Length: 393
Image 1: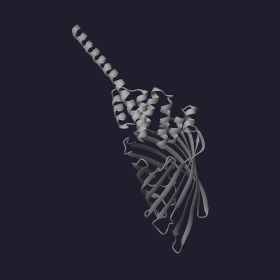
Image 2 (image 1 turned 120 degrees about the vertical axis):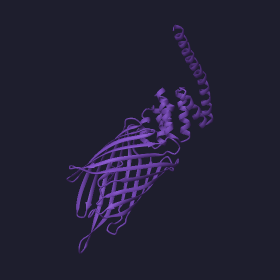
Image 3 (image 1 turned 90 degrees about the vertical axis):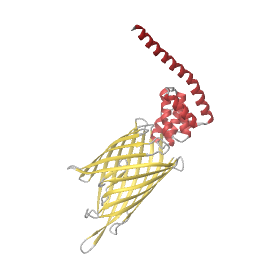
Image 4 (image 1 turned 30 degrees about the vertical axis):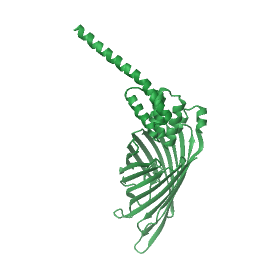
C-alpha cells in the first residue's frame, strides 16, 4: 500500500513539474512573438497567439495591452475595452492602458464611460488627450419629426427638439432639451365641424451618474405645457432608472411618476438585451412596461429592438411596439406619448450614420396605428419621418 502511494505522489510531482516547465518555456516564446507582431502591426496573428496563451494560463499586463491595441487598431472597440480593463487589473495606474481604454470608449460613442476613465488619469495624460472633466457644452443635438396623418380630420403633426449635454465631472453629466409639438384636430358635429389647435412646449433635464463604465444611475424631470383649444394645462414627470451594460448583455429597470392636472400615472419597466462581440455587431433589446393609475393597470406595453452594423460608420435598427401608448414615456422619459389620439401599434427602422468623430446622424421611419379619441373603435394610419443630428464639441 505504501509503495502505491509513493508512486502516485511521484507521478503528480512529475506532472506538475512538466506543466511548469512547459509554461516556463512557452512564456518567452509568447512574449517574443506577440511583441514582434505588435511592432509590425500583425494584428490577426497577435490576437490568435495571445488568446491561445491566455487559454493556457499565460496572462500578464503587456500581453493584454498588445491584444487590446490589436483590437483597437481593427476598430473593435468593445473587445479592446475588455483587454485594457484586464491589463488595468495588473496595474491600475498604467498610463498606456488608461489612455487606450479611454479612447476605446470615446470612439465607441460611450462618452460617460470615457469621462470616468479620464478621471483616473494623471493631469499630464488628460492634457495630452485634451480630455476635460468639466465642459459647459459637451455636445449639441437636434431632431425634426414630420408625421403624415392618413385622415382629413387631422393635420400632419410636427415636432422638433434641441438639446445640449454638459459635463460636470468625471462621473456626472447633464442633458437639457426644449421641444415643441403642434397639430390641428377636426371634430365633426351633426351640423358643423370644429378645428382645434393642439400645441405643446416641453422642457426636459436628465442627470446621469456613472458608478463604473458599466453601471449607471439616471434621473430626469420632464415638464409639458399643453394648449388645447381655449384651455391650457401642464404636466410634470419624474423619472429614475438604473442600467447595467456589459460586453454581451444589458439590463435595466426604470420608474416614473407623471401628474397631469388631477390625474396621476405611474410607469414601471424592465429592459434586457444581448449583444454580439463579432464583426456583425448584432444586438437585440426588449422592454416591458406597465402603466398604472390610482385605480388599476391601464396598459402593458412591449417594445422590441434589433440592430446590426452595416459598416464601421453605419448601423441599422428595427423596432416594434405593442400596446396602448397613451401617456407612455420612453428613452429615459425623453419622449412622452400624450397626444389626443392614442397610438395602439408602432413599428419602424432607424439608420445611424457616423461620418466623423464629432458628428452623428440618424434617420427614422415609422408606421403608427392611431385611434380616434372620439371613438376608439375607429383608427387611421400615420407615417412618421424623423431626422436627427448630434455634434460633439
